Image 1 (cartoon, rainbow, N blue to C red):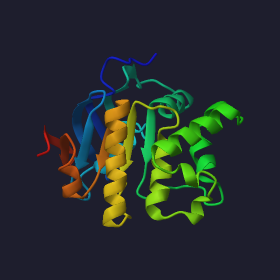
Image 2 (cartoon, helix red, strand yellow; image 1 turned 30 degrees about the vertical axis):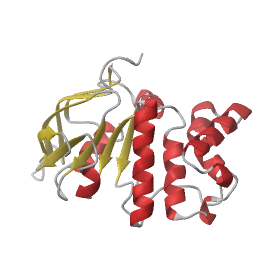
Image 3 (tube, rainbow, N blue to C red; image 1 turned 60 degrees about the horizontal axis):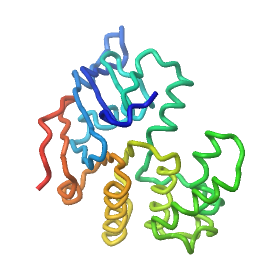
Length: 235
């Protein structure tokens, strides 16, 4: 059962190695400790090869740590089988990627409905209402029936954020969410994520190379050579 009052995310001594048992064995994450509280709005920064992607995959339950503990809303993920991890991921974590991964032939509303369909297996009126409400929240009510392929990059990324919110997750993982957008679209998308954070109390962890964007978050978490440097509040 998810804890609605405790931390959204807790990592304790998380390590990750690849090629275990071979001469090429390499440890990429070296004992990561991290806590994200409900409603935090954080940036994760670090150079290429620092372990950002590996850490994000583990937090998102797309990969498993070699050792250490990972708790999502108080639920210890150690020992969960793949099906249980998939359920937990679907209900507690939303994903926004640099490439929005929308289904181009589907309408905006149909794309937003996809997590609900995967969870419940069949469409219904409540799903459609939820999708349309979310599109209204991200300023796309007029485009709800437009195919994704007929929308601008900024609009598509807002659809992707609405989709990430469909299951009301406690945590949104955003991997370079403005990386492919022009400056104005990027600013609009960032402002929308911040509004969701403030109004709904959703925790955001935004992976970015954009230091101007990172500086607008409440907390910057830096990873270098597989180790977290002390987190610090953004200016």
